[in-house]
Length: 462
Image 1: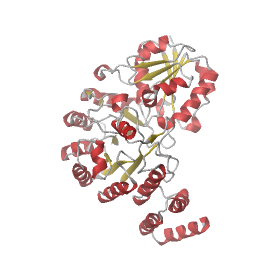
Image 2: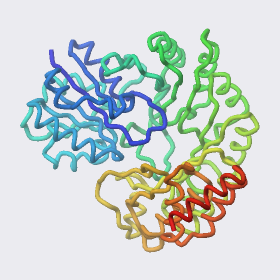
Image 3: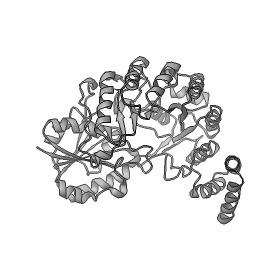
Image 4: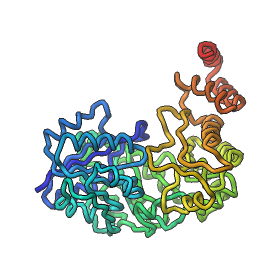
């Protein structure tokens, strides 16, 4: 029997404390094979409550330590890996999206003994039983799994698992669409693989019995509405359960799959918000994304979502192939015209193997080597360093476009930091007009007292 420790570093500002579904899915076959598993998941364990890694290793005595590596948390994950190697003689595994996309760079760090690409459920037991500390680093490409045969995820090995409040559920894996920026083909597959909707609903019912503090569900499929009838069947079963519905979050909804029946079912199942992946409001840039849907379908879906009383969210990417600062304004105009309640502005990050990456290579773009990268920092008005630039959309213009988009659509928190970021950004990015209009909208919403407070803070900052 081996002792396996899994570690997941979270982003600084997670939207919901959703536990790591992938690691829970690996716990099930490992425990079935007789191995002992402990999981430190910072998504559900506040960083201030995180026990020192050295103490955890000393107390648990792992034979293998596995890390789920994301590009957004690469720096903090590598630091944990260094600590783990210093505190233990355990073999080190690295998996997850970043390991799948950049296996060689992780292997070259000489910090890990094995890099796992793809879905690891079918190989994890063999790897745990055979990986050795100090052997030349192996890169293992895991085979695509049959999702119908998977065991339910097991969270009982997570530290503080009893405090889980959001439960993730997969009703399918894979996505057959070929959006230019998306790395789903490398991470899971283009082949859409559905689970039995009844099995998914039964898993949710069991989770509600198991987790006393559960207050929300999140569907984490690559493309949940790939086949509308399949997802609607799951929603019907979810809405028909005896317990009152929990708030439901559904990611990655395609506009061309949104109709009145879907919205009625998703509301009955507990959803209050639907977020559409728009990517760009400029017709030429949108066409290069190759989403196999139209901006007209996006507008129709957005109108339907609002008519059904649901919060409308939109996701955009700044800096896609063909994008420029001027074309980003098209995305801003579309977001405002559709009257979205939430808008997520993401900076383009080209991933190897995607059509977008090939486009940037063909057009002489400069793409940064793998590094920690995320569009979201400690404040929405702090602009992340772009990972790519072209001659007609430089890094400086990409930062300027991101700041403009956030300010012009009011996608930032009006806190103590906001005024300083706004004033500095107005000067740095030469955007005094949009900043002034954002402040004016805020004053109109909040009244005279807010205007006086803003004037006082601006005077202090100047």
